Amino acid sequence: MTARAVRIRSGQGAGGSWELASSAPHPRLRPGVMGYRGIRLAMTRPRRRLETPIGATTLLLGFDQPVRISRAGRPPDTLVSVYCGPTTTPAVGEHGGRISGMEVLLAPWAAFTLFGTPQHELVNRTLDPDDLPHPLATPLSELAAALAALPGWEERFGLLDEVVGRWWEAGTPCAERVARAWSLLVRTGGAIPVPRLAEEVGWSVRHLENRFREQIGLGPKAAARVLRMQRARRLLAAGQSAAETAALCGFYDQAHLSGEFKAMTGCTPREFTQARRLPAAVSPAADRLGGEATSLVLPHRPADWSGPGAHFSKTRRAG
Image 1 (cartoon, rainbow, N blue to C red):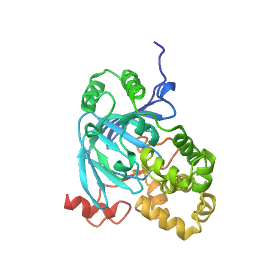
Image 2 (image 1 turned 60 degrees about the vertical axis):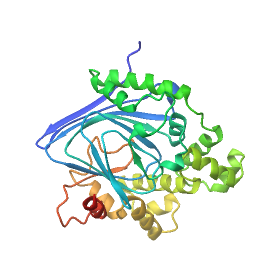
Image 3 (image 1 turned 180 degrees about the horizontal axis):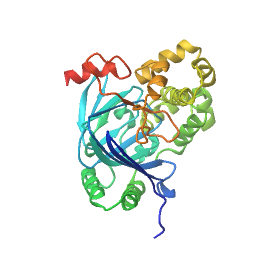
């Protein structure tokens, strides 16, 4: 058996310790299975993280402590393992400071293949993965327990390849034209118009929209919004001005960018970039996509906190 490449980073300080492991899935699973991460946090105080919409779905197989996930307009979910479907709205995840598990990052069409569920039923939702059907019908809590029992990250990544590979072979294939349309959207950062996208894959706009919602979750226009915003966050985090970012990403103007940013991240571009510069705001375990600005580690919230994520406070108290 050929040894796999595993990257492990770790650190320790007054606030606790952390370890992050990452590895590429087996080539037969790519590009649908985008990446694997192993996470271990042992912090001295609770931790809060703002998660923004990304062009991927996430399966977290937790080993021990639960995560509380709040999203505006929905009751909070408290789960050890979490499936997060396609989203257009931000969420805040909170835990007591200790968390460990394995994360599988999926292209949305690959999630359809693995679970067979119409993806529009999962938009802006977080679920216990055991509530999702999948081809082998084995409870995912059993997979999480098996992963936790293994001695190291390399063995865990190997087991993920084995199990996900069996799901993949037994799953419902995604339409090739849907995967191609998604790839075109990703490649253009959401800039390709929907009529042209339909023309590129040889479908009518209506047929593309129907199949896209089934197998991606979002319609092509909404998916383009997410990918455009993802690119905007990346540019802003790299130092581009809001005006330059608006022009490069195809927004009408800076006000259009600001409105979309607020709707999809819960804060303004200025608040997001300022919060990313705070010492506690970004850690190696924060961003779900390599090279992207997807997340903010939020300060422990005082009663009068008014920064990013503050609009979730009513949801949290109501829970």
